[in-house]
Length: 229
Image 1: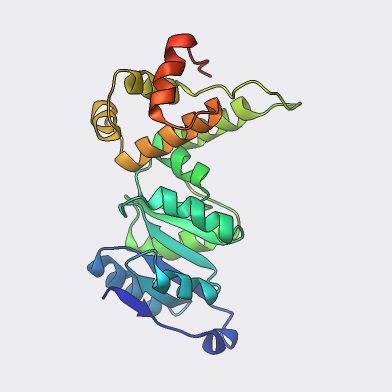
Image 2: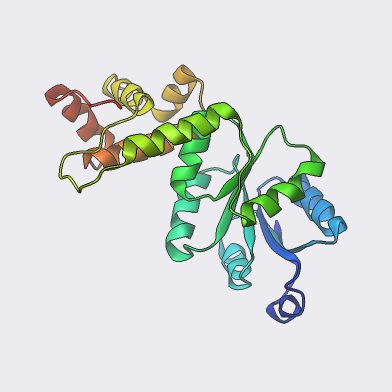
């Protein structure tokens, strides 16, 4: 059934020296391999490995894991991460197998993750990345670090403003493609970015412009050009 809760609250209370970990992936061999790898380390207690964001996931959350790994290939994973952060804001969510590209990392960072394991990471890097995340650290490429710095700098404002937030160049590009009638799938192919990343950009730009849907975005384009930052 894709559900594997491996611990209970009483057992965890006696072993808090370990990192307690939950895993979400709809790929069975990934779940099973990660359970074996982390369990063999002797420093990680995998409390659950589930295939869906359903009752089994909610049960896993009640065990209060230190970290939840979310497979980035999971359908609508970004949407689920945003929902989870609203109900469990202190939960450490790490994106698993994330492409180390600026757009992808920023999209996932905006959803609420505290760190990520890049697709290029080796097995011997998994545990050090978990440790680093709990210390508030995240290894990443210089290009990604620079992109995050630019995003933070561009988003800083000393006083609140009622004007729409400025769009990033990528959001501006996607808005223009929405105006051309492209679907999210078509946009992701045109820009060669992940579908989940595209959906995140669309969600963000609609929020910045105070719009509810793509049709409104297209109408907005005819009245005012977006301000890219």
